[in-house]
Image (cartoon, rainbow, N blue to C red; front, side, top):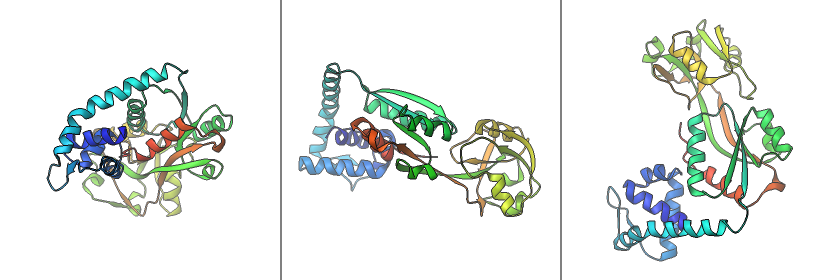
Length: 286
């Protein structure tokens, strides 16, 4: 019930289910379902959905007034109970090329929901994280799902398409889309590394597009910085942004990173399951 109360309060404070989901850092369908379950459990309507912005019913106003105190009491009780046993530890491996904004938003939201669960975070490449998972030095890994997903228990979370990063004063920046053929003989900053995603240069080469490689780096933020400086263009995931750089869709470009969680089936426990469910309902945005 506490999740339902928390989501209900977020919706009322934000004035809509969409903004309430953003405030609670979960998906909009998850918030809608959570509030509906709470109404069914209490057998009352809490929100007048006909209004814009949404408003609480009389019962909803009463719950809104008392809800924060209820959540505070639950957190206090949870803290008291946690002192009885040793704190549990969740060890999470995160792909080093996942944007820091995604990492911060997920972990800060999860920490607020589970303040008494200790968390350790490990950065690494796909291969490094999988090796640590096999050696049982990690409980779960947030990484790109590929062939390894069949070896472990897994849960897909979100897809991340690639765009063409161009300086804001570049001719491509004024276009809605660019064609693959437009990229012929353009200067490019090429991504190196071992993240197991399809390299953009290979995709271009498969369509007979030849580019001029002016720089190579294993860091997406360095690629973006070089684009902003006017050194060249780059193919980057949607989540990476930088002032003075515009991302433009490329028609016919089929590069996508699918992110998800991997874990050992025999290592499943309540805290891990809670993190998996939280990550699945998290509001993943570019």
